[in-house]
Image 1: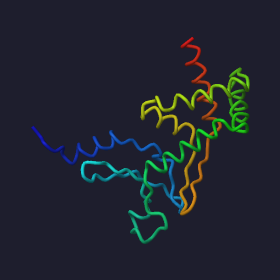
Image 2 (image 1 turned 30 degrees about the horizontal axis):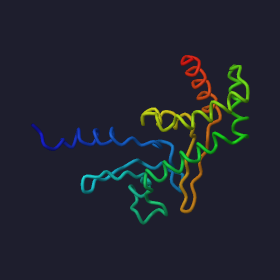
Image 3 (image 1 turned 135 degrees about the horizontal axis):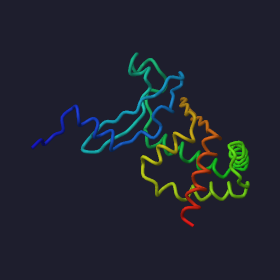
Image 4 (image 1 turned 90 degrees about the horizontal axis):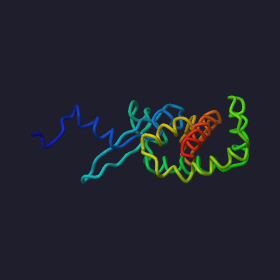
Length: 170
């Protein structure tokens, strides 16, 4: 019986336990993607995103070397949830849903997006990650700011899925 997982399987197990919500979406100040990483200290896992430039060229080569994963993910999720209630985004989502052929009213879009905000915390991490990949186009980290770009088409797809789920539940 192994007391410690092998290096080959141990890393995969850790990554499975600590999903990177913004993998492939988060970029550093230079525009290059940031990579999810983690470290374990005293039995606790600390997750973060690190600039690839810092990995390749050294930590002195970039202004933002790494950001705590939980902090940046929470900031992005807060931003997304605020946007879900914004009238201009509701209108854009409704327009995108109509372009996709979905017969839905603006009021239905508003209600579905508001309901989604309450359901979010009940979703499994894998489902949350899938939805973030659908909704978020890109996250840019600067020294003093975080810019989040949302996909209106992704919101329209989410609204369609929520509507189907709602009909199945009724």
